[in-house]
Amino acid sequence: MTEKRTISAEELEWARSYEVDQLKGWARFPKDGERFEALDNVEVDYLTHWQAPFTGGGKGTLTKGTRIRVTVDAKRPEPVGVNAYPLDKSLEKLLVPEAERTSPKYGGFSLWIPIAQLNKEFRLIAK
Image (cartoon, rainbow, N blue to C red):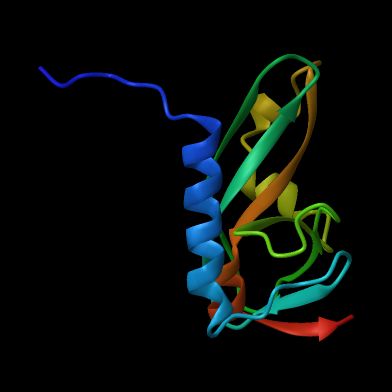
């Protein structure tokens, strides 16, 4: 039987710093509010936000040419990933199941895009 253990905040910070160091050699870190366009069809993770102590989500595909706006926390200018929002609001219907979208406690959705994926599968279109 494998032992379960808790990962400490220090271990998480070490892992985040290590990943950022690996990205620094080749990746560009985005600025808050920049806009990007998918170079091809791209599988992404999405998060559903709720008016409750819960976050859900899943995977979906953005089609080639889909445009997004990223948010970057000023406290972490070199993140391992960013929250993003499609510029075309109708994308929500394609990604988030209707049962979730129509729930009274549903509070919207966002995309989660790792920096490596952002650099490889998207192009910057506006600063």
